[in-house]
Picture 1: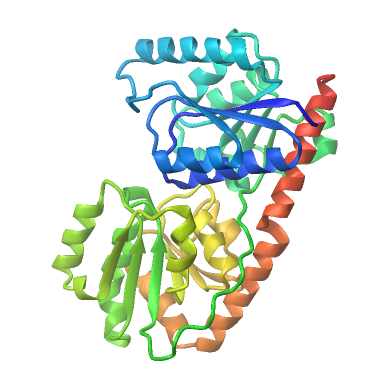
Picture 2 (picture 1 turned 120 degrees about the horizontal axis):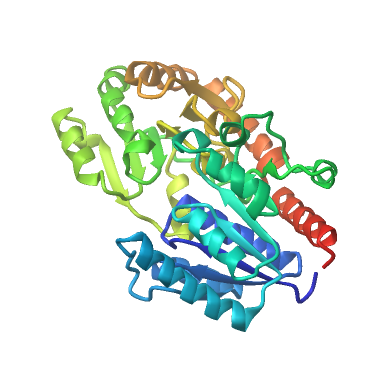
Length: 380
């Protein structure tokens, strides 16, 4: 596929899971021989831009100041003008839109501007959308393929049995599939010094949907059983101050390390300090931090919601609990704390699951197959 141009379109480029997975998509395309360029409409972080540029991806910023327009009209004008100029100079064969607000508008404008092949990927659980007829319409009439990052999301969007990407089904006319996210399979870090305190870890944006408050509310119960325990929270977000106040109210601040937002290259350092990873989300399209933890052979306790319930196999690679249930969460964590053998068993099984299902090599192969099928079907 040497020389075939792909344009990836995304509303924002911050240090988040969707952006990191978009970076992985760009890498998979480049490794498959495509030329890749990226357009960001609104907010951006210079570090994420650097990651793409290091890959050899040119990044176009429609709003250099990172400002999101406040009205639909000004948003449409900004996107139309930016897309029009970019298409006239770059001439991509495929535009791949990350379906985040304003995803529908971006797809409609690309089609209006004459793009023949538009792909879309939704990174959130479909049930949070009130009007699923919109992605269904887009899948049927405005995009070549509509991809979801979990089967639960695909089912919620389209109301039929989900399916991992299949060349055979695509050839028969299916317009939507699941394409799982992925992670690298890193070398395992050395074992922690045995004298170090046992550390629970969280790697997440500090926002309502991530459910960190449920973990904080569970901590007093956990600390009664294991008073030397530590909690390491890696991430930043609009709920940081609220969560800190909650921790203070619960008198658990002394055991918490708030590491803040960390760049991708430093995450191995932080995972190496964790003995167990907690993912207490209220909803989750996929659960990237869960597979990252599993790749390091760390046991995971996660909410039994959406894509997380596909990523983490209950009592096989981790433990699943109901969301927003601090008592169930504390019981599951204490169960693992009391059973080092089970910790090791779940961690090893999790790493094997990443290797078998969520490894980058598998993702890259699927992306190459999918793109090849689309181009072949469209006569490119």
